[in-house]
Length: 239
Image (cartoon, rainbow, N blue to C red):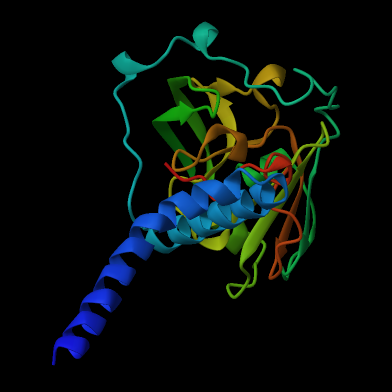
């Protein structure tokens, strides 16, 4: 009886001690250079997976009154490369490809035939600042219906005139506040803010909200999550 009790106590103590040592072991693994990047990638991947699972498609980001808006001239440019990639606005088209029944080139006036949505929402930058802006455009979900995107697709990828690129999961693309934005503060987008068309996604961090859109691809496979994601940033990064 005594021997059995001692064995049970030993097993119990061993489990407790192993649990105590687990964080120490993890920290020790981070101290080994060759383990650092795989561990960071695994942690980021798990975070993105968990964030996607708890994302609620019908949950709206906060909206604000006009009196709470950041003045337009105080709205940071949040530029990736250049403030103006030199788009010829008269010849601009959005090229649509991938899993859609109506691929091709769409001019701005065609996009603007869809119902216009205006929203006062917060723009949050990964650098630590945030502002409240007024954005106008059409729901990306409405545009995807217009081009008859395959509803079984999983991703929407956009490419930009400044060589930036970004991808959205399907739930985010279909969210009612995700806009193909062509106005800010009730005026056409300025070149510095992404003219003639950009993404406005108040449920996402700023770098997901690509500017100077030139191409949109609907796909079932994620080829690349985005420019900054390829540098190690979060692919989901919801707010």
